Image 1: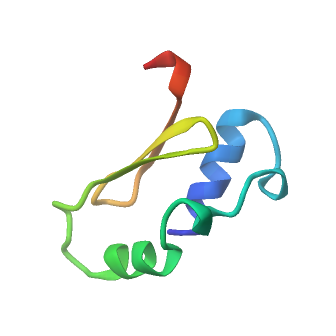
Image 2 (image 1 turned 180 degrees about the horizontal axis):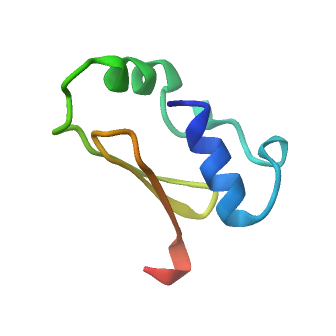
Length: 71
């Protein structure tokens, strides 16, 4: 999951992952991976700001990225 989030943000911002700040500057990637590796945790929902976007990760692993200025 911690790999999918920067990819989704990079796609939304129309840039490459290497141009983003490290995810670990905002959240603990290992904690995210652990949280979403548990089977059946469909009630989990994670939301945070990263690279001037609002990132929402649903329990099924779907990553939704929206620019902060569109909220």
